[in-house]
Image (cartoon, rainbow, N blue to C red; front, side, top):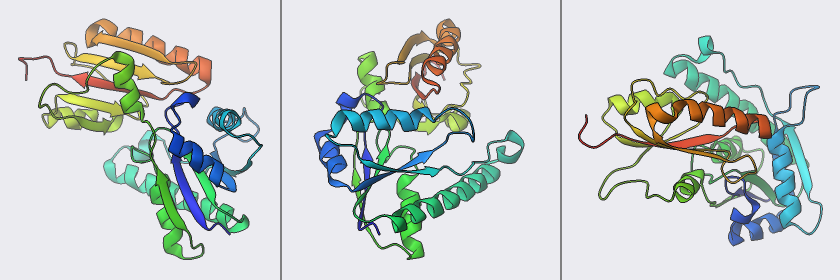
Length: 259
């Protein structure tokens, strides 16, 4: 049975962006638990393979990697269209994942590691799910969180910018809640978790976009929304075709003098 669980932020994808603290944490655990989203009989999960390459790069031995079949998450628009439906779908998914994590921790001895892209504090469910495991009481463990470089930081570095003007607030949200934030008066936003990018009516806003940051399929686009929206969509498709997936993030800023 696992004695300590380490949630380790490993950066957006570039192995060179793994911190020294994260490296020590990776070398300290007896096994890693990895959620595998491969469809039955389909292609391997590219994010599982990416974690494997990262471990190969930083460990001088072949680690024990415990793959669990990731529970299917409800994503159909007719079942997740309202906030209440979406919250219920996420709740069910978290509960199913926590049971899978629990079984993996019960079946293996020593400290366990969970590799989290970016930083565990930004729109990642691992900490919440492990807290759910602990609350059930079947597995007793100490929870340890190691921070990582986030895609928010890397986006700013790649575009060589500060994420806010002097004294300006920064609002971090998801693609699903972008319109809500803008309607609420937010004018400087970092937007993550984008299934689609809806920029209708924002033609004069400035955007700094990045896809698959820190990986070999990285894409960057910046400019006035109306001028670059088609370029962003093309870049998203290139990233998806190259890697089998796309994770993107962007900074969106209202032009000065407009409301």
